[in-house]
Image (cartoon, rainbow, N blue to C red; front, side, top):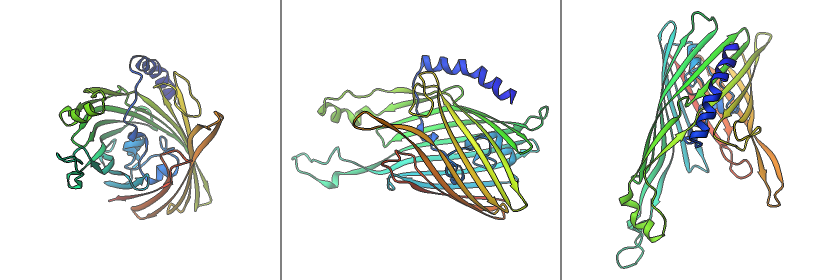
Length: 353
């Protein structure tokens, strides 16, 4: 625990300096989360992720995978099916003290109509001139985890991630970044710390101005130039404890908090320097076969038309089933405004062999 506090103390000045020099954040699709188990528990996973999805939540947890190989797939749809969200991961040990994983994430909207040439040369509407394109965000993660032999119970992990974002043939960006995580276990307690984008992640955008010049001139808008988009560091801290009742029942309670340094956010604790977004998750298990999950987080303040405000939070629900080394998980969750966006069904599969 002292190591976690020391790391937080050392990183905080660097994070505050980053905010002062580059107060901008991006790549928010990587904040959605992966896996129906994690989403059903309101993303309280920093201290408890112990399967292939730990490559995203906290790579140090990869060392808890019990099988030689493990794969996982997830699919979700948001905004009435307009946006598709997919994840695939694979993990395997390198030796007795280290583990390796690779993950791929895509969040995209497909079949967007391009109406730039809807009117032909004579001014008539010609629907045959409409083409379609996709706007998508991709992330590719390579994760490595290793036991700290001199400190029993402590594990460390890191991610190297490549980001690719594109809006059809109009614009695309490439980015590169690092994550680092720690995990400590003591009896029934688990403590996790995950530093995302520890060196900041830079997306270099390239704009195809030749495709947009005519439209921008007609609408009297200024054409955007090539630019650099910066994702500032973020810390996630988690704690969890397992309770067992007789031999058949268990209860896992987890609490996480995200510390962001890109200015005031609409979260429970907010300031210009640091904002804190807490969340909690529960998982009740029966014989390690069936699981019921609940979670709460995403606390926000919503303003009414009369300028008064009220506080909302996002509840989450999930189920899980294990049959040998095969598992299926389901979550009912949302990534938008609870008062307007419908909840989404998330399914994920996992297999070890």
